[in-house]
Image (cartoon, rainbow, N blue to C red; front, top):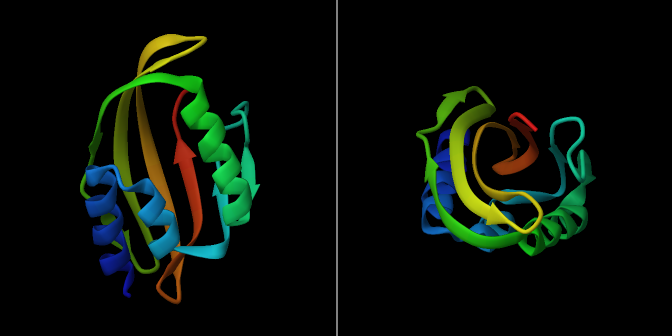
Length: 119
C-alpha cells in the first residue's frame, strides 16, 4: 500500500471505530508510538506495548460520546490528521480532546505514530 492508501484506510477504519482492525491491518509489529511528555505511557515499542496502552486507555473511560477524524495530509512517507474525542473518564470527568496525529509509513505499514495534544 502507498502512504496515501494507508492514510485513507486508517481514516476509514477510525471513523467506523474499528481500532483493532487498524492495528492488525496497517501497523508494523515493530512500530513505535509516542505520546506527549507526562502521558501514562510516553513511548511504546511494538504492538504488544501498544495493546497494553490501549487497554489502559479503555479502562480509564466511563463513556465514549463520539469522535471526529479529519482528512489526512500526505507528504512522501508521512501523513497527519486531526482527531477529536469526546469521552467521560473515571478520574477526570467529561473531556473533549483535540490532537494532531502524525504517522510514518514504510513498506506499506505504519512504523511510527506520534500524538500532539495538551495534557
